[in-house]
Length: 312
Length: 96
Image (cartoon, rainbow over all chains, first blue to last red; front, top):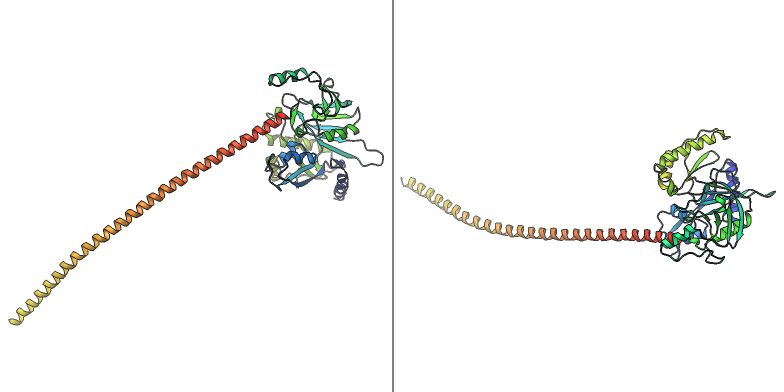
């Protein structure tokens, strides 16, 4: 209990300095961040609120199913889902969980500094333009990148009846890559983590496989991520994690291409829990965990994208 | 003998008077009943007419309520369709 309180206090201290940077919890705690609320005015949409608090579009919709995306009521309470379970991956470099549409960065702490985790919402590739999975590295960093539309995109633009795309889009306000780009080593370097000239699409499946970030987020990440940084791209719509001996679950809709696999979502959740326990069998704590079935069913029904306690 | 005749006459008179009374009172009762019956019939008819009118009004109100409900449902569906279209257009607009 002392450890939890200490962690929460220090986490809150770091949080107050920078909204998207949190103290990295110790190994037996997988949950970090804080659920907060705010109120909207008639002048705002949920998209504005999402951007203000560094939250993705789908994330804020999942957390606020009863708030109108375009016309929230004046003074409506909006939940800010800024609490996360760290994905099952090595806690180093960049970890990108595709169905969650969120990136985690675990910078190497400098001497005397506490380790932190930085997290930002991202956009990923749409159904026919999947973002690749697996482990890779940042192989190049580019400020003010030019964009060379691939032939497939040019064909798509013509088929849609739009104006033909140019061979090269120069850097500037109309460049869809924004001002910063990090090139991934996977697939012959054809995928980027980049900014955007359409920031309100962040947190949705709208790209051609690249990873898109809010301009202010990629600007910051660009400065702190170096070439050679490891990148893990994972597909975990069902995340599980501990706060010491208490189990939490965080549920997201699966990727469109996995809908058939996740048709029986409840069964997939049970399988994920079993797999998680099997992985965790060597855990230091040997206490028996009793699943709260009512809380689990409610978490599945709500699929809020936020961590929910499911053990007693 | 006179006494007996007198007694018989008195009995006859009483019987005649009773008969006349019964006859008279019988005529008055039928007339009142008819009048009452006709009043009742009028009232029943009026009540039936009122009930029919109320039923017609209720049916009309129900039809209007159904129509309003259908209109609201249609408006709601249109609103949802429009929102879905806006969402799709927004998503498309966010493509490169």
